[in-house]
Length: 113
DNA sequence: AGACTGACGGTCT
DNA sequence: GAGACCGCCAGTC
Image 1 (cartoon, rainbow, N blue to C red):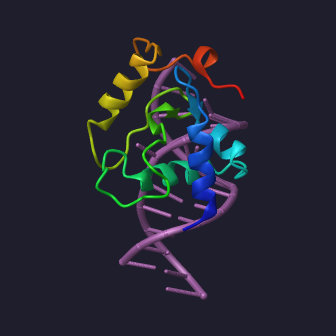
Image 2: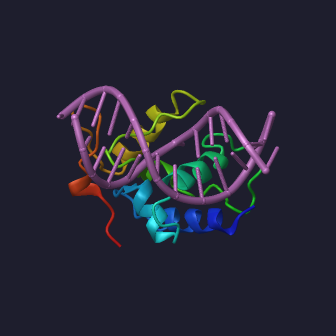
């Protein structure tokens, strides 16, 4: 276990509702620099919708659904297909609108600490 | 030790 | 605007 992962979770948990953050942004705030990959890797370790997975320390309070890539799209992961639909639903519930391309206007919803 | 993989980012074409 | 390439790091085989 790397403390970097907890740092990432902490940063993600700081994202307010109705706002989204990019992986690169999270990485920078977490002190990882440009390692956006590591951020996605850490989030993937959460198990997304696998509450059965064991991650007692990270808790499920991490709003991973507020994290999108630099294009403003929901990144497709290897497994758990359909999870993105739930993510989009959660974001829309928070007031985030998607365009025809199914992308988010980062210029409007991008979280700015 | 070496090689492959992965929720990505930025730049070039 | 979209696609191809490279780079960066950690974890796993």
